[in-house]
Structure formats: structure tokens, C-alpha cells
Length: 342
Image 1 (cartoon, rainbow, N blue to C red):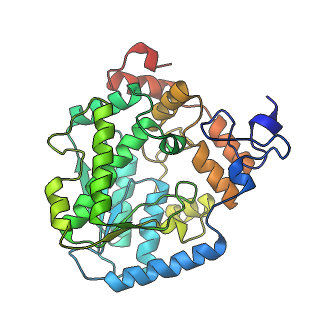
Image 2 (image 1 turned 60 degrees about the vertical axis):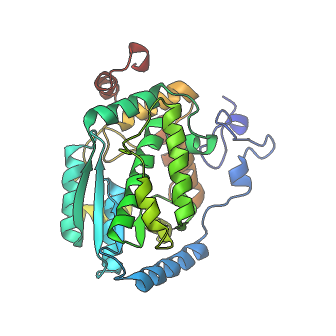
């Protein structure tokens, strides 16, 4: 491989990825030539804006925040820290159990809620429906746009879309003005997104079309934000989606040290890219098999450009192999044909 041409000299992106262009002279991808990651000053301003927004809306609903808690390191740290900075926030932390969350991750989620003082809710969906959705996502091609496929596998895009739909629903029903996700600086550049009724309708319509493209008609709104809930929202104005990790310095080793001090236990998944989900190894294998690149490359590249991860560590994460026995086990549980397993 000619690294100066095919692999960006500064981050970890490869020219085989859709939309990635490596300049022959500099050896840099377009994102490194013109970086758009959130700057230290923007991070400070985002922190001020987040604090002001949380203060201004406190007490306006049954909860102040509906929080997406997976039991993984980022979401666990995010919940702990936001409650350290805003101890009076009334938070309902929702763990969407997709059927493949490790038992230790669920214990970690409960531990963090106890330590932080947040209400814990485990959201479940009938196993056959979820497995069908993940099976169809694994078999699908190009359901999601390039920008989404650059940042996550088809299965992960399906799962996180369900989480977003149901957390928006929970926010409207409970009157919570905000939902929070622990997306890293490598996953998003927007600290705050306004969730207007029009945005919610658009989000629902988009995901409904993507589900149909995968052969799933969600007539019972198991995965989709319920239409009648959006109708209620028309009377209430806008809510906000907040990504607090963009307002703070992000350092993985510091996060793991703090979590260890408060009782969070590594789940031992033999997966360098997940600390909660048993599906992850399979989603990585499936994404590489279909599209030829690692689904975490874009996030890791963003962390490298932010200076929160070294290029060497980023490349090591991408080169680390998946657990083949786990991949085979997940393929069997999803009832996939042999070509979807190693």
C-alpha cells in the first residue's frame, strides 16, 4: 500500500471510503486539509450554552432530561458528569435493550444511575421484531446515505435510529425539554440540535422509509415515534437534543479511570470499539464485508483530528480483529445464511 496516497498521513481515513479524497502532494484527506472539528474555544462556548439551556428550562416537565444510557463508557461517564455539574437535574436514563446488551453493561447502567441519582428505565422490544430488523439490516445495501454509512454500520444505524425515535417520544410524553446522547467529538459536530415538531415529523418519515427499504413495515409503531405523540408536540414548541461530550475535554483514559473509581466495570467483550454491545463485532464484520471499510474509521479519524487520540492508537483500534466465535454466534442468532458469517 502506498500510504501517502491511499491512507491519510494525519488521521486514519482511506481513499476506498466513499467521499474520501487523499491529496497526492500532501497525503492528507480533505477533512485534514480543511478540518471542521469543534475547536477548544467552541467547546467552551458550547459548555456555556448547555449550562444556560439546562438552567433556563429546569422544572418545566416531569423530567428535565431523557438520557440515552447504554451502560458503555461514554454514556456512563456523560451521565455521571452532567449530574456532577447539575445535581438538581431530574434525569430519566433509558437503556434500550436491543437483546444484545451485555449483562455487565446493564449492571453498569444501574450502578451509574444509583451513583448519579438518576431514574433508570430499561426499554425492551419483542426479540423477534428486533432480530428481524437487525437481520434485514445486515442483508441490506445502501439503505442509509453515505454520510451515515461512513459513521456506523447498517445495524448500528438502525439501532440508534430506534433509540432516537423512542427517546423523542419519551421526552414529549414526560414533558422533558431535552434528550441527551453521549456522542463523541468524532461522531458529531453539533453540541445542540433543536427538535422542532417539523424536525420530528421529518425524522420519523425518513426512518419509516429506511425501514420499508429493508422490508419492514412498522404499522404498529414499535420502532417509530408515534404520530399521535408528534401531534401533541405541535402545541408545545421545540425541545433540544444535547451532546454534552462536545462541551468537555474528551480523553478515553481519563474517562475509564473516573468510571473505575465509581464502580463501573469493563464488560470484557474482547472488542476495542464497544464497551456494551455483543452485536458490535458482527456489525463491524458485516460492514467491512459489504462496503470494504471499518465503520468506526470516521469517528476515530475525528478523534485523531481533535487531538484526543493518537493516530497510532486509532490505527490499532481499526486493525484489531473481531471475535470470530462471537461473530458466528450472532449470525446464528439472527438466522443469517452462511455467507454472512466468517
